[in-house]
Length: 313
Image 1 (cartoon, rainbow, N blue to C red):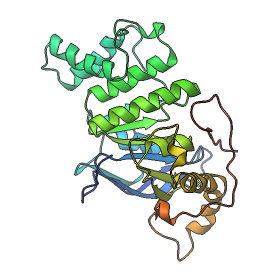
Image 2: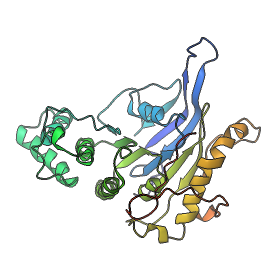
Image 3: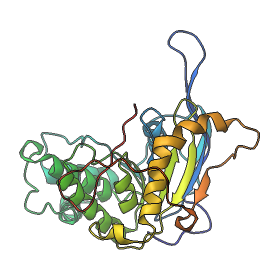
Image 4: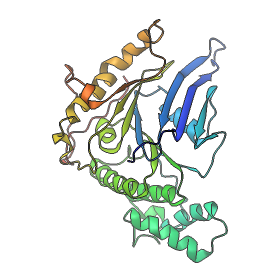
């Protein structure tokens, strides 16, 4: 979203998560040697097959889980627990069902700024409710809302605390294609307005291309790693109905699909080679060559372009 500063806003160094074997055998290493940086204002997506540890990495960044090895630094400080400096949005909206839309968002605002009076809290909460297009629904309970509206409330609540970083774990995965497209467009507008730093997990290649400045590709587990990083230089603002006309769109898309279909499985055998890189390989669109692998396209209702969703076999 913004030009990166010299010093990274988020720095992840040699992160690993190891679980003891339930049978008493060798410990299970979900991922190891995970290294990456995110600059302030960047929108970063991470994708990979199920089981490679994407959600665990997000939980460690949020302070909801601990790494077995390695360190996470955000804004110059080590992450060692939950903080209101990091907003989290999961696939389930996690709204309090007995509170209205306004009260759900206001609860977060009051937690962030306990000294504010009721009117100040209400005005602040309403600003973000309006930002996600829910003005007029602020007095409704979650049971009176559609799935897409509930997720918008979750987004409003996360943005309302003005976090230094927003962490999103497949936030639109449970929504239908039309609703997902609408909320993606709203998220683009909000991030452009707030210059929010975002780390988002997605299985949707097209979603990653539409939203991100950088796409991180994880190899298959166990011992998964960030294998490649693709710099998404497609110009902003992005229009979902025309983005496929950009000259670098298909090289980026085919590179991502080829990794998920083929290279993610091969990376494990190359990982321990003597000449294996210690950090992810970084690609710019100009470096990418059209893949020989034909993308697997699943047609969905017309929302602008084909949608791909890869599931681990």
